[in-house]
Image (cartoon, rainbow, N blue to C red; front, side):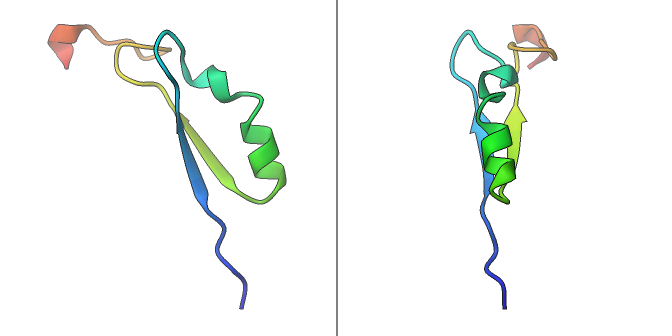
Length: 53
């Protein structure tokens, strides 16, 4: 039986976007982990206005 590896959900801090994790995700994936990076509303590529939230 094989052990299930963790899935990492990485969320950036203020004034950043998902690319803050670009150096980390390849390391996790090379070690067999899944890594998801998200852009928070109002930051990054999918920016939304406060009224749209």
